[in-house]
Image (cartoon, rainbow, N blue to C red; front, side, top):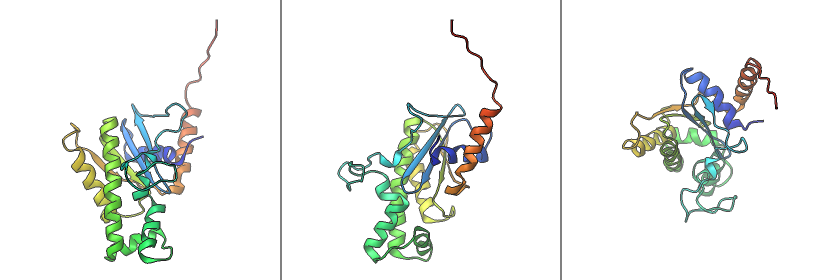
Amino acid sequence: VRNNAHLLGLAEKNLLNQNTKELLYFINSVGIGMAVFIGGQLYEGNAGNPGFVGLTSIDIKGELCECGQKGCVELYCSKKNIEKKYALKNGGKTPYKEILKKCDEGDKDAVDLFTTAGEYLGMAVSNAVRLFDIPVIVIGGLECSENHIFFKTVKRTVMEHTASFSIKEVKVHLGQLTEDNFGLGGCQLVIEKLFSQPKLIFKV
């Protein structure tokens, strides 16, 4: 059993480059998830479920999150919260994809919202780069192009905050897969295990 961030990360890693050993994959969804690859392997943590970067606090005096903490990353940049913030200014519920489109059309509220969201998500990614010393990043779930202000702001923020840290230039890639493609990662996980060399262990 794996969460969607880990499975999508597996699939995106395979699409990016077979020789990529270290990778941080982020997915922007209802929350913000992350998959960490070290030495070519998915880091599974203590219970197989690491990477809930969306529930890490980025502003200890910020908004109250559903988890009980203040200033969690996802409050400022997850799809759910982008919809909430846009609704507060414009009334009624507007789907995330429609807000993306409004941003492209120059809607000031949408532009301001995605600029701020990009800065917060970019800071979260920068923190992870500093934490793991991994310079290859893939960000999925944004559902926009590389020229959209959301992705461009995330990338700019990451580059600004890692320039003096990483020996290698940090590469920020836009994910190629949609959220419902997580099954590709599941298939990859099963196939890799299926053809692995069986082990026989004797206890003496």
